[in-house]
Amino acid sequence: MDINVLELLLIFGARVLDVSCGTFRILLLVRGRKLTASLLGFVEVGLYMTILAIVLGGKSLEIPQLLAYCAGFATGNYMGIFLEERLLRRYVLLEIIADVSEESYDLIRRLRGEGFGTTVLIGQGKGGVRHIVKVICPAREVAAVQQLIGPKFFCFISDVKGVWGGYFRMKRR
View 1 (tube, helix red, strand yellow):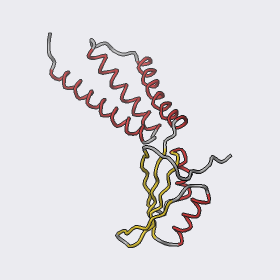
View 2 (cartoon, rainbow, N blue to C red):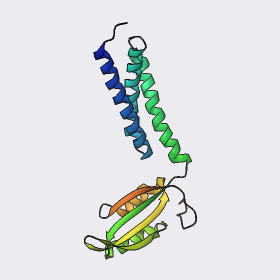
View 3 (cartoon, rainbow, N blue to C red):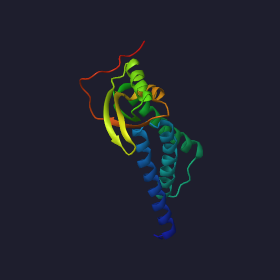
View 4 (cartoon, rainbow, N blue to C red):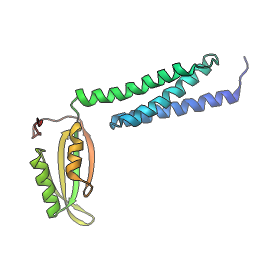
């Protein structure tokens, strides 16, 4: 059995790249980045299948079969996050940091007017007193809240492990 060190290094490097893609793809999926995760999954499984073919005997892969396998894997990633969005009730916490101003009071009124439970705290930032506006909502409603917030205010989103009590917007028909 001849040991080709260069081939071993190439297999090792390709596998490191493949697993790194997989780890990053999972993180993208958790953040709801369906299309990017799916495209990365296509590349990931293409690398994996190519490495596997080399390791299992140096056979060449048929391109149509490889593309079909990669496309199936990528589509499965997309469908998985699509199903998660539709079937699971996932909540997020949006925290909006704003100057205490008429604009922030207007934002609070708009959020409440659209039916979002909104809690307002007063905080101290580098530049002075700030409103900290907290909104817990279903993940699928983040786009609606983002549209209300606009680009003016600082906002970040955190996943919420569980929710009970409180006020939640009723689904509009």
